[in-house]
Amino acid sequence: MIYKAFPLLILLFSGTVGAQDTTRYLIHAGRLFDAESAAFLENRFVFVVNDRIEAVTDADGDEHAGYTRIDLSDATVTPGLIDAHTHLLFMQRSNVPMEQDIIQHTDHERILRGAERARTWLEAGVTTVRDLGNSGTYLDIPLRKALQEGWIDGPRLFASGPIISPPGGQFDDLPYYHEPIVAKEYAIVRTVEEARREVADHAAAGVDVIKICATNDHGLTLSVEEMTAMVEEARRHGLRVTAHATYDDVIRDAVRAGVDGIEHGYSVNDETLRMMADSGVYLVPTDGTAEGYIHIFEAGPDIEISEENVRNWVASSQDRLRRAIAAGVEIVWGSDMYLESTDPPGWAAVTGLVSYAEAGIPTVDVLQYATRNGARALGRDDLGVVRAGALADLVAFRGDLEGAFAATLQDGLVFVMRDGRIHIQD
Ligand SMILES: [Zn+2]
Image (cartoon, rainbow, N blue to C red; front, side, top):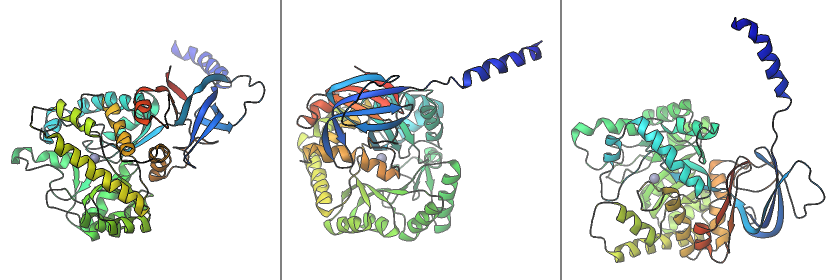
């Protein structure tokens, strides 16, 4: 008898189409961070319709029937933060071999845990992440879909698929019986032809960005020719390329090959930094605070760590960040928070911004690295800014965000909206 019910169902359905819900919010921001000019504006009103910002004004005018008012007049509103370097599907305890996590967890377990980890980024004010591999064989693609469809709560995710790497991937001396995990976790290239084909395969799989390992940090590097071929192929598919590169000569090769960004860049020299600035190549300094590193060591098995070593490492990262800024390199925030910490991972990630502030960088610049600059690295002008037409990703902090940055960033978050949907409201 089911066929008889059909006309009725169709009638019911068509009756609801015109009445589709429109959500409208009018947000009163006591202060608003303007990511384009890197300045705080006093008293702004942000009008949100569905998933987009409709308008930003300095007066709320008269009646706004149909808009739900949100009073953040005692808070600072910023664009949702963008973490340009995550590994949501991978986790490592300090002083435990990298392969351990991959061997011990099935793909299904990694996706479910990735979903749980993703939520902690949103709860820390991050509404967009660029996930840069160590995500098995394209496990980031279904995670991206689950986040986009709203099946789970978390940030918007940009996926990169398996990291394209020289032989061996980033593993350290794998026993032969674990070698199959290299091919599961990395796309290995040995020739220019393979390099080109891997990028084409990634594009076909639907990635948003290409992540390459210019060096695997175990003595093997991609050649300039291989990287150049990958950049060319990526451009054909409208994709950007970012390179894990730690040592100066490797960074220079990657820049020569035409990559868009350098991840880490720990021992980059001033001449290479000037090359990066001239070529418009951004740097993602995946830095942490001394306190954050200590929480990571505390989460792993007992090892002797000297606090002096940690502080020296932090000091050298800060020096590299300041030199990059002095050379005119665009800075993009990325946490690289794959290490287990005693803190929830999203919160541990945000300490990366505190590390920039501790290096002496003004709050407005740090916020720009984590908003507009992240969006630029993604090639998106409708993210990382609060203006008409942009996606409604907004967060708010109560307290003195500009003057007491670390404390307010970590304890003052009172509001999180992604795609016009409120996730946190205090
Ligand atoms: Zn990384």
